[in-house]
Amino acid sequence: MKRKGKATISLLFLSPMIAELLSGSAPPVEFFNPIALLFLVLLYGCGSVLIREAVRRWGKGVPSIILLGGAYGIWEEGVVVKSFFDPNWVDLGILGIYGRWMGVNWIWTLHLTIYHAVVSVTIPIILVEAIYFDIKDESWLKRREILIFLTLFLTDSIAINLLLTQYQPQIWCYLLCIMLITALVELAYKLPNTSFRGTRALPSYKKLWLIGFLWMMSFFFVYWALPYIIPYPTVTSLIGILQGASIAFYLSRFNWQTADIKHSLAIIYGIITFFIILAPLQELDNPNRPDDTSGMSLVGLIFAFLLALIWKRATKQGK
Image (tube, rainbow, N blue to C red; front, side):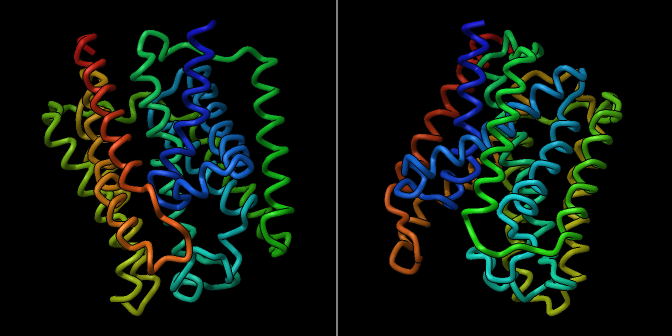
């Protein structure tokens, strides 16, 4: 139980650290503000802990984690901070105009749903389970603890909704989000574990790393560069959907039943490498940004060191 508690605490903090700190959305000065950190941990951390617990109790795998991660993304951005609908959301940039239709920031919505599904939820869960490999298939929480985490998560969500901005979308926006979340949760529950059991032999670790890196680089290119290049938001949306579907189809062709933990880590490391490279560039761009990105280079180095330790541990255990 003590080990499960450590694993849970690790996930509580790692999820917001990857999603907000490493990505530069909340640089060190902002992230380590005690109040901001509390809100982020209770939102990202509790969300990831609850998702992991549900998937393990259902006996499901990574595809279900990704689907529930997408549901989490819709909850956070659509219900909690309301950025899916707010035309003046601080991080939107051109996406506050480009792709906005019927009161919804559609390109931003697609981008953040996928981002949260992969980066905010799936990656932290797999990394923590790699550290605590001996208990990765077990439930980490008792029923009473699940209720506590759920209460904290919902209380934090309501507080952020009311306090972060005064903007409130129409009721149909909230209803649409709840419907989509319900559909994704239902799909995650019913999705068979055979989803990623293809017939092809798995690629090497290096190739999987490259796949993860190129996917994340192209992911940001689609949602942050194409709006300046392609004048038609519908085309950009279709490219984004095709990109996500293509990587899912490609990976599903391999027999992941033969995989060890390092196969999953290799893809994740490729994705995180993109952010590690981006970290010092964000600090160099400090004079041109409204927030203070001091310390981002150190954040990148710390994460690189952490990934090396996790890989060494997985190698030592022969996983």
